[in-house]
Length: 405
Ligand code: SF4
Image 1 (cartoon, helix red, strand yellow):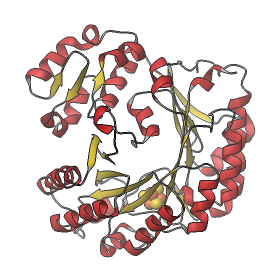
Image 2 (cartoon, protein in one colour; image 1 turned 90 degrees about the vertical axis):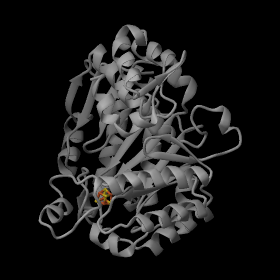
Image 3 (cartoon, protein in one colour; image 1 turned 30 degrees about the horizontal axis):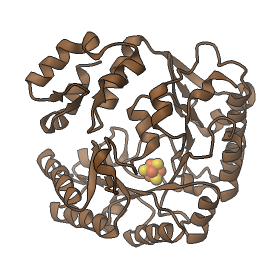
Image 4 (tube, helix red, strand yellow; image 1 turned 90 degrees about the horizontal axis):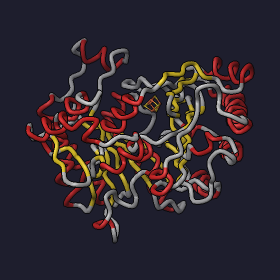
């Protein structure tokens, strides 16, 4: 078995959207649905190319990692873009092609879904029957007026119907994405959204503060004065409200932007049992393979990225199997820095044992003085097992992360 197979986490990028949202700068394309079939064929060929490697390509190898193998199940994550634009047969083909790379047995398999696509009970039940056991619904807001400003292709009613259909289709693990700090969004409207989340008893939610990406139509509207967004004080208060409402509503805040509904037994766990296992692999800086246009992979001592566009991707897979655009070498220091700034996003923090396992160094040898300074500044706290952000540190997370780079 090729050594890269020890990377138990697979990200698959689906770069198609019905329409570009006004705030989005992801690698995704509208009006290319006619290329889906050729793209899926190329994806299957790419996965077969990885599988067929007797050895990893020059310089790419995986670092088998005891802690990861013990703690995380295999994961497959279909992200986008809009994976739910794909027909069920496409998922069937891709999952079959991924079989020899990541064991489906016991795996967490997530599909990102957009309420503007066909999220009927039949479609979702079809995903379920293919082994998909977690879906992530991009709702963003329950305000129809703001959804129009964002250029989303669905209404709040569609989002609710999608969520209910997912429950009826048998999904027990459902994430909903929301954004706060949106144009015209009031604190009261955000509070109502949070209460709706609690009322629906959503299993998991990811809440992101709006980022105005420079090259997007929304950023141009804001700089042109045609649209205004809440200021930092208001968005800060919205984040605090999320901590309060979701905490009181039975959710565990386990990562800067992520909450999971508390289940029996969670009190004894560092991370709640229904946390997203695929994202945990990122936060624990595990190895993962990325497939699809523009996908990134993390296979120390390298990071990989793929060619970006749909046509480049299809052509590159035909020519060379694995369509890498770039391989960035990772030094031992890079690996340590990533382990710290990804791991500190988790409320459980970074354990000393994890740093030793992952980076082969003792935390204090690598960054003892920096940690002491950050503890003295009230930004980090530590005990015998781990170092983690304080509440104040969470507010200035980027400053803390920068100290490890
Ligand atoms: S649906 Fe998602 S990926 Fe597609 S344009 Fe909108 S935000 Fe971007």
